[in-house]
Amino acid sequence: MLSIVGLGPGPGYATEAALRAIREADCVFYEDYTGPLDLETLRRAAAREPVRLTRRDLEDESGRAVFDCLREGKKAVLVTAGDPALATSHHALVALAAARGYKVRVIPGVSIICAAFSVSCLSIYKLGGVATVTYPRGGVYSLRPYELAEHNLQRGMHTLLLLDVREDGSFMPLRDAAEVLLTLEERERRGVFTPDRQAVAVQRLGWGGSLLYTTLSRLKDTEAEGPAVLIIPAKLSPVERECLEAAAGTQL
Image (cartoon, rainbow, N blue to C red; front, side, top):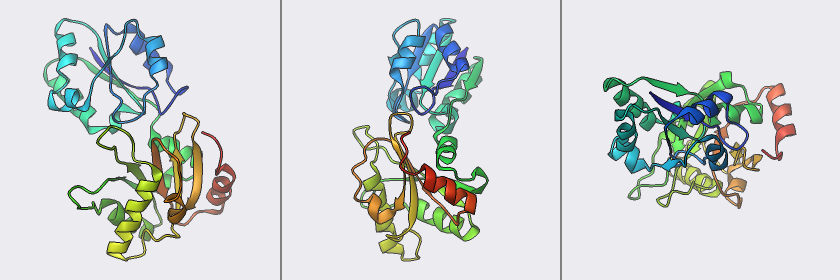
């Protein structure tokens, strides 16, 4: 049996189902490259020291350590931050395990996507899609965030933007994300990521972070570090606006 378990975005978000699966596992693996993991909670729940797997272990080597455990007839668990079903590398592991005849279950965790909309008071019914703000690769910027946000704004839909991971494994800070978006606007000039464009930043949810409701130009000057997501809101309903303005600045 392979269980892929989400611990949620930070301390205090683990479900009883997640903790039970960890307690019952013979082999406990975890990855922390898709999001920050609550290692203290994981270690308390596990019967033995959890083993860290890198992106290379799971993607390039197709989770070899996990399958070594399964071949011995043991229960293996792979623990991730947030919700494990949101990372395509975990989808591939589920498919591979099933193809090899192993039982597989996914135990959902609190997703940063749902949580970001919840704490910011924005309507999930107006979520128009998700994209990732990436650093330029070889000087080339991905236009996906720009094109998606443009499309969503025309339809009155909110856009959620995940942020890239640096080469050293650290997460793109909000100021870098804002700079990338402003650069895209300078190149495209279609009024999507203008300096005065309002943005909602959910920063370090579960780790003593905060909710910011400000403009892209101001986000470029923020000193906030650590994992975050950005939401580019479309026109807000009166209830969304009042709730968001009341929640802005609160600790998460």
